[in-house]
Image (tube, rainbow, N blue to C red; front, side, top):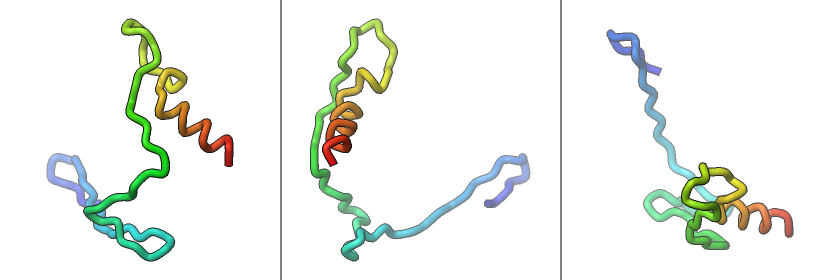
Amino acid sequence: MNTLADGSAFKVTAYKYYTPGGTCIESTGITPDVEVEYEFLGNEDEEYSYELDNQIQEALEVLGKE
């Protein structure tokens, strides 16, 4: 970490990520097994909650099957 004269700091991390099969995903990413377009399941006046997040709920359902 590098500290600046005003007391603030910054940290730079540089790396490449490889899948277990040895594929570098830099600039390409990973295609998801399940794609779910985001939809808030609550009413307009409700605050965000993971229970009302369809992507989180789908992830929990998929993980529960494994």
